[in-house]
Length: 199
Image (cartoon, rainbow, N blue to C red; front, side, top):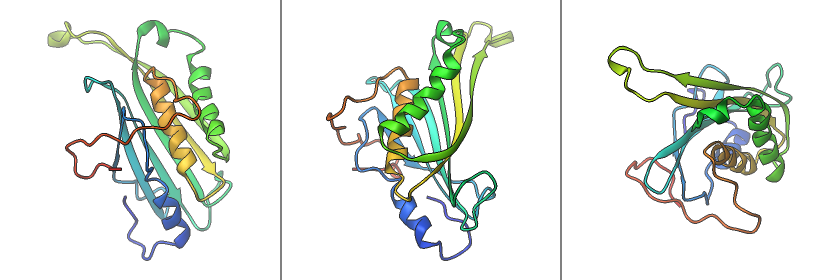
């Protein structure tokens, strides 16, 4: 977690930042602290994540940034703002579907609703990217990706529901349905990075 040079951080920021550390995540998800941007708000914290298949094939990556400004900012509707990014590989026929944008956006809003994560002023973009190789990379396979960038204002300091919704969003983008109600996630697997979250 990265905190700006201003000290000490307000109690509201510290309480909210503590809830970015979930006690349980799906075993396919690896979370870690990452540096947060310092110029978007007086205080910020961020987590990064990857979604893996059993064979350690990375299916999706993302980051979630929490911004805090005691005075608020234009368009925030409060002191907090969450900024999310998700990128996932997808089959070409899926990225060609004209409904992919609205569907991907609904993954976010429905996940927030499912976790009871109250929010306001949500906005974002969904981008489809196609990468082709040329020259000495002409033999590389064509890849297609989905990128979702979004921001919204949480209406409470406890961000655990927002983090859970973001994790569900990444799993949906990776082709994994969310866990059914009442099914608990297993403890997160440990990887080599000592900075990764551990349960």
